[in-house]
Image 1 (cartoon, helix red, strand yellow):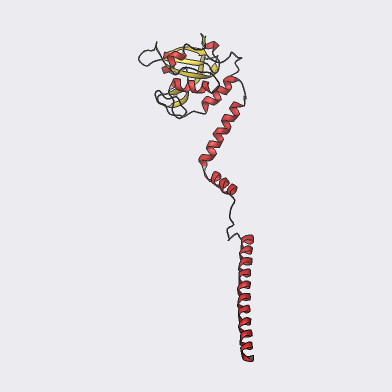
Image 2 (spheres, one colour; image 1 turned 30 degrees about the vertical axis):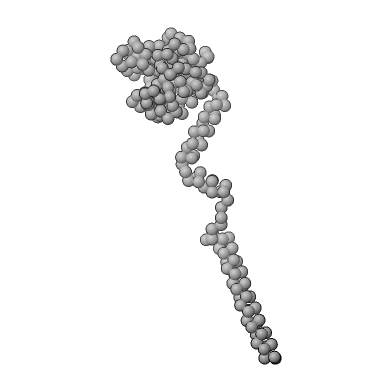
Length: 218
C-alpha cells in the first residue's frame, strides 16, 4: 500500500511538470510574437474593415479619378461664377468624349445630343435635333453680340445653308470678331474649336441665346 502511494505521487509530479513546461512555452511564444510586432512588424495584425477600404481606394487610381470628377461637378453645382461660366465648366468635363450619331451622353455624344445634355443639367430642355435647336431661345444677330453659353450653328457638309452642326460659345474675341466654342465633332469627339477655322467660317449660319443676358467679361 505504501509503495502504491509513492508511485501515485510520482505520476502526479510528472504530470504537473509537463503541464507547467507547456504553459511556460505558450507564454514565451506569445510574448515573442508581441515583441516582434512592436519592434520590427514581422507578425501581421488583422486590419479593420475601414482600413481595408482605405487601402483599396489608395491602390486603385480609377476610384480616385471618379472621386475627383464628382468633386469637380459638385463645385460647379454650388454656383461659382456666372451661369454661363458654370455651363462652360460643366461642358468641359466631357472633353474627349467620343462622337456617335444619335447619342445623347454621357459616354457618347453627337453635336445636338451634347448641347441638350449640358443645358438639361441646368434645367433647360432643348430638343435633340440641331435644326430644331436653332428655333429655341433668342436670336443673336451679330458676332459682336455673342456671349459665353450661346449656341452657334453651322451648315452641313453638302449644303451650307442647312443646319447640320451646333456648339456652345466658350469665349468671344471682339478685336478679331471671332469666338471659341465647345462641341461634339465627328472626328475628335467633344473638343474646343475656333470660328476662324476655314471649315467653320464658311459654314457659320447663326446663334441663339438660351441663357439670360449678362455682361460679358472674357
